[in-house]
Length: 136
Image 1 (cartoon, rainbow, N blue to C red):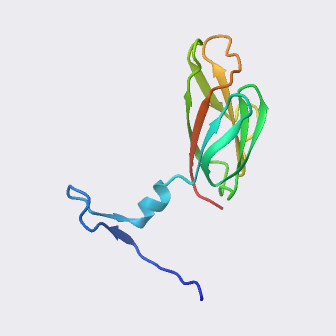
Image 2 (image 1 turned 45 degrees about the horizontal axis):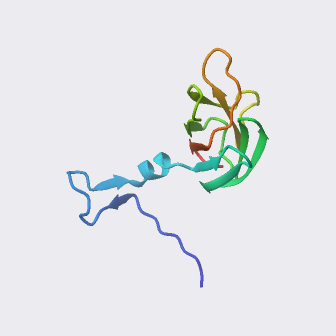
C-alpha cells in the first residue's frame, strides 16, 4: 500500500464545540502545538515518566538534567516553559534553563535551584518542560 498526502487549510468541528468559532486555520495548529515535552522524576534515579519527541535524559548531578530532543529544532531560538513540584521543607525552587551551556537545537538543560540568595542546587520530585518552535 502506498502512502499518500492529505492537504487542507482549515479544520472544522462537527458541532462539539460551543461558541461562534468552529473552525481554525491549520497554520495555528502547526505553529501553536508543542513540538517537544517531557515529565521526569528528578529525585533518586532520574527518569522520564512520559514525553513527546525526546530521546533521552542525562542526570548531570543534583538538580541538573539534560534532555535530548529526538527530532531537532530548526534553530536554537525555540521557547521553553518549565514547571516543578516543590520539595517539602524547603523554600520555593526555581528551574533555570541552559544556565551554563550554549543553546542547542538537539537538547536543553534544566537546573533546579532553591530560591533565595544562595540558590543551592536541589533535586525536585517532578519536573515538566514544554518546547515550542519549528522543527528542522
